Length: 438
Ligand code: NAP
Ligand code: HSE
Image (tube, helix red, strand yellow):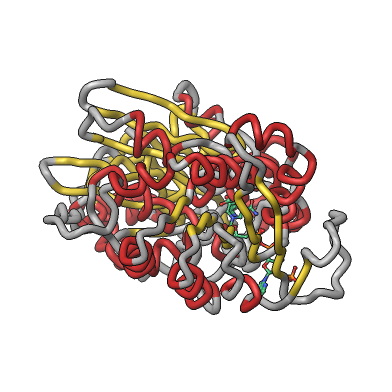
């Protein structure tokens, strides 16, 4: 049996997991792929760094050119992360006639077009199951199992790090900084964790899902993107009190032949499956016009779940299945894109949280501004503060939290209200405004 010869470019968290599966389960590889899968090279930046794996002699190298020039290597697993030099290396690997498996969603989001064109030109394929939702086979589900449907909506938790932080903060009252540090140690976070917590990573994954589901290439500047980095524990607790969980939700929906897209921390009713997804788990709730609602959940980040998705792609390429699927994928090919709904026109109910001075007229001023901007109030929470507190602070009024739930309104109305609220000296600068999922 001729082996499939593989090189891993980047032996970090995910690359090490991939190498472990290939080296520890050769029989499983033969059974599933029909032939051996041989790890011929593993490329790193710093060859002297201690590794959590023992590799066969001469596999570890810092010379990526040795992979590009080795005609025996059929497949490169690109697990370097970032855009440069990952993009150049991937183009060179394709030009050298190698199929490529990657988990690099940043690269696919920014340069998928160019990379897919090059793969097609070279009659090679790119497999990327691990790029979205870690171990959940969502790319296969979209590309194979849902093809009888017009996808109507995708609502998803796509960043394991953010979901882990939100869960630990609420359940264990741990600080944001402490949990983020643990997410990095556990291998969930990106090399630059700012991409996890500011919504960029989830948005990159949403761009890929939107391309697959709706055949429309969007870029990150076309939709609202915010992360969990501004939230306080009190927001998670107020949401809890109101019957919701806050989740970093990525949404791509077809409404009146337009795409509604956004990535934002969002209040999700506790009885919805998405609200029950805790820790580094992800979930994709996807609706098709024939099948109706479907849910896919599992580990969205971390070494072995992500390696599971990468190795399944390697096996698909060994069998020849990925090449067939790649040709069929409606990806980055010329077609009429769907229009993207302007962010200001998207409507939702909203959770607003202010810190206000506990004194006469403050709430009346806020309510007037909201009302003047066509925003109707659904409920209000201001917990009673102690009279002593108020009395002892006559000159500088005590700051107290105020939470307002609105009826459905447009984002445009909210932004214009917020500009007026900013002028009120009785409200502190940090104002939180989160959508509520339907
Ligand atoms: P990582 O732990 O930071 O590993 C990156 C690897 O790439 C390291 O081995 C590093 O070498 C190597 N590398 C970086 N620059 C290089 C260069 N110029 N030349 C040669 N080697 C270079 O990253 P990771 O967490 O495994 O993630 C890899 C990719 O998978 C990223 O695109 C990430 O977004 C994606 N991903 C990660 C997860 C996850 O849970 N971690 C899940 C899904 C997708 P050294 O070891 O010598 O530094
Ligand atoms: N940093 C990413 C996350 C890894 O936390 O979800 C998986 O793509």
